[in-house]
Length: 245
Image (cartoon, rainbow, N blue to C red; front, side):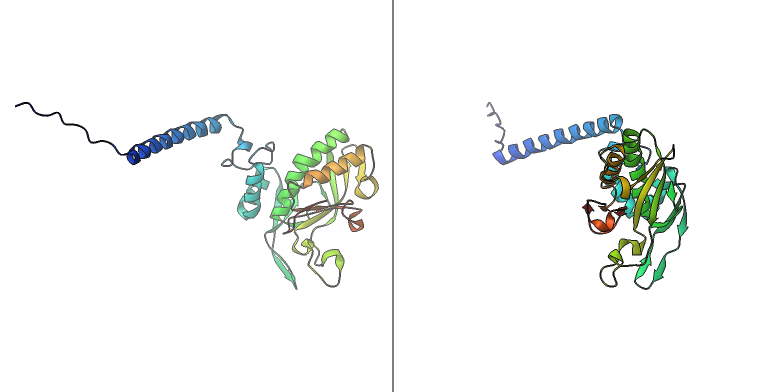
């Protein structure tokens, strides 16, 4: 007697849909893997979030992300400074009434005058990236020569905002701010925030570009456009409040 042919059990629409979804997911994973390999091989390191942050690299797609991570990590912050050629000495934390400092150091060979002010490592890191990626390009573009000295009014000062008797503590009270007053070029030219910021020539363009170029690195950047109290300096800090004026 001839046997009846065994008919396969029909596949439900749900199973077919699941199989299709799994196949699509597998294809996407393979494509993502291949794309990742291609990016890792051909993209510059400054565009890759998993490569180390370096001061001597151009600013890329991932620089801001890596900079933020390094600024929050005291060890990584110091490593980036050291590998970028900036020396420093550790500064012990201090407590002076309401003015406490921690994670502080003194930069060496950083073109600052007076030399080696006390500042937090995130402030030092922001300063280093600002000088390298904003100040020097602005100086070459507008002044035709590099900056060799950055004059400042200081970083640590145990005081309230604007030196008032009451109110919020300034970021200077935590060594987390720097007030830059002027720049000197390699030929000896001095460009002053007080005298030259509103100049319509090369000096003013340089200062305004340097101010704008500080905003990606520091949390707060305040200058003569902000108020009269900042008419003679650029206030650069890594505090809680963001501003770029």
